[in-house]
Image (cartoon, helix red, strand yellow):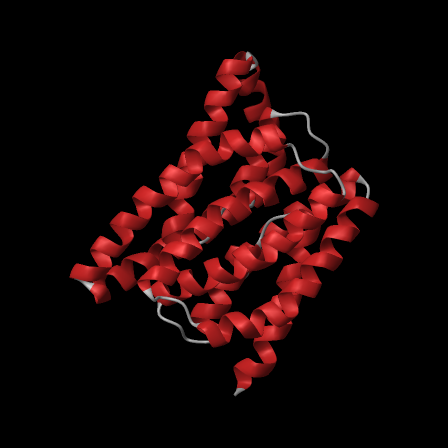
Length: 258
């Protein structure tokens, strides 16, 4: 009964965050699903992916209308992340079929590791952007930069398949380091890529029957208005504030483990 009240509020808060800065959704929602609602890890991943696909589709539509999406980079990221999602999902369900308890234990460990990774990205973000930016200068040729986006997309796709965490934070870091996009265009591009990747994962979990639909409905009630509000706020904010928001979201992610 408590979930009737807490799930929409969690969806609203995380929806605003996702719409405004494009990241933090999975890393904040997964602890809520695991520890707040007590779902097993495999079901939590499936439920989170379906919720995220719905609200990020709304956020992507808003950013598309506001012309803050670089579609060429979305295509490059997706050309790596979608195969990564498919391959990791196959391994995910193969393991779950043969040993459900072992699979749940490993997935929970991976979720924790992914959230810690996101927290580390938050703490080290200025240093990482500076040093990765310097490193990526040697790959400024279009062919090399395209390859980096495809390969990084593959890695992100595999991680999201197993944990539903990281589609925003890690891609935002790559875009901030490799490109000269404005912060709001990083948010829009990140969201547009995430909705393609997460939708594939959501469909796989729907077919597998590992989605809690009542919980999805409860968090979507708050999440959709939240992501619309957040998307509109992102355009009105200066780049520096949006970037500060990205860092804050990742710090909150790290705090969610404490």
